[in-house]
View 1 (cartoon, rainbow, N blue to C red):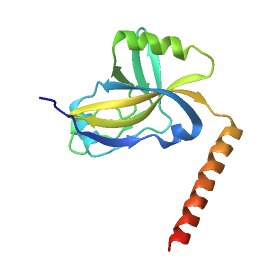
View 2 (view 1 turned 180 degrees about the vertical axis):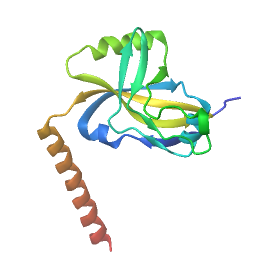
View 3 (view 1 turned 135 degrees about the horizontal axis):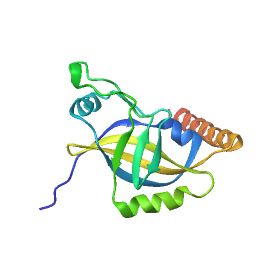
Length: 155
């Protein structure tokens, strides 16, 4: 019997796709406390300006803001504390070696529920230059113009 886990996306880091080329993606679990999970269920998560750090063989997500749970009183944690990510040791070593290359960084791309567990999609990213950002924006605008023209033609 094959169990399919439902995936519910809670937050996406759209700015990461604007600022970086995403080379590869990885899935990691997140070590959270009870009130933090309840806040994530409510969608109170921001991935803006977040990144991942590898320290002493462990990987941490820095800058992820999980708003305090309003009914959590004394059990609420610091919203900007570093969250430990749960990955296999081999994956962490691989990411550490890939991150060592010049211009690469690890960026959280999305937070989602896989079944009842909170997961983060991490991207191995390389920074875009200003002209790359302009080129991407020009392509998007051209696609929008083509779609608009096709809709007008089909009316």
